[in-house]
Image 1 (cartoon, rainbow, N blue to C red):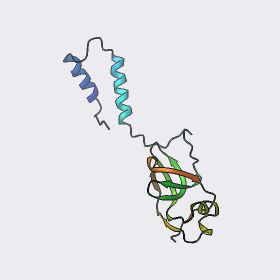
Image 2: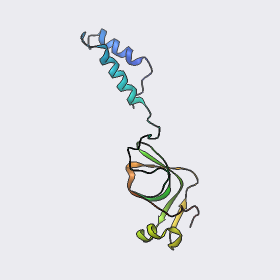
Image 3: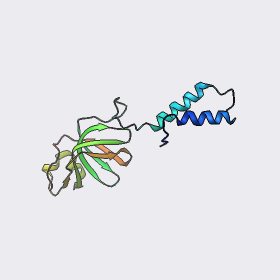
Image 4: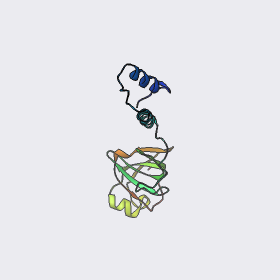
Length: 142
């Protein structure tokens, strides 16, 4: 991320103009475009996506497979690069995958569950696949 103090951009651009690095024909709107570009690059973009330009259904319970782990949880927020889950659990061993999804964790013996105590943030780049589950979420270790 480019982190420049306010006013520094104008100072740098003005200095470049005075040194002749920016031609006299360089229009002020180009400088404003550069300032806007730097503003966008510096923005944290840490607000949840407000549009529905994603396939996720906020408020639904999901089973999520990532490159290394399986999780369950209620999807509460979608960011550009992250998903946020409440009532989440790491599913250390789901046994027969299809049975776990169809019958639910309560009706499937030998399932290993490790609940989280707080919200969980999952990087979207680590997700292999995810599906809505109809079963209630596991909240106790087993």
